[in-house]
Image (cartoon, rainbow, N blue to C red):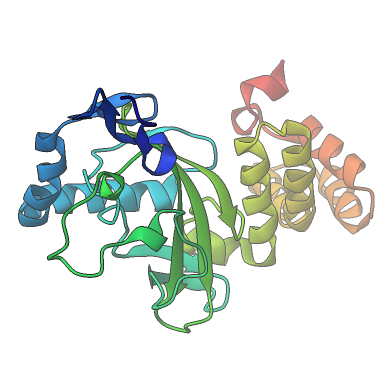
Length: 274
């Protein structure tokens, strides 16, 4: 007598019956890797290994804080699905306008599709789908200062390769900018950040547009510095007056062209010289 095999979630085949004899079949995860009982017991071992937990949290925090979208990151993954979480990250809060600690909120909006099968208590037998498996995991973080700023991440986990990759993030990924540089740039800091975001996505033309908008805010101060440099170098009064006229004009291309013509060679990049 042959009965239809019993299947668990995500195509996890548990048992099958052939000729009236119940036999245990290998439990598999994508891409069809057998799960042994020893692998299942690693979950409880991980709970007692504080060093392994600290290593994972440090690596996962680095990934969340610094890595852009669509970049694979090698990481030491925990064996349990519920162990895949982030304790804290330090991110830029759009509400506080500064770096703040972010933690998971008390009630999450997003959840992994297997969360509905979480065991009620630790006394319940550990099940195969409680193991960390390949798939998409949501990570939600809330600012601990204002309780309004938030980040939502969708992370693609590859257990076999030991990698994670962001493929969704709200708000948009923002490169880390030194606070002192942010203060110096002032209102132009937003253009600098957007330029870096475009460069990360290989949108070079878009990045140039933001860099140009940034330079527009600084071209006059740069020309003023050039004026002072020329004055200290003993440049004629006519040339100094010409710089003043360019500063007073409203044509950006004329300003950059003039600056390139009269700028000292040691201040020009090799690309500009060629």
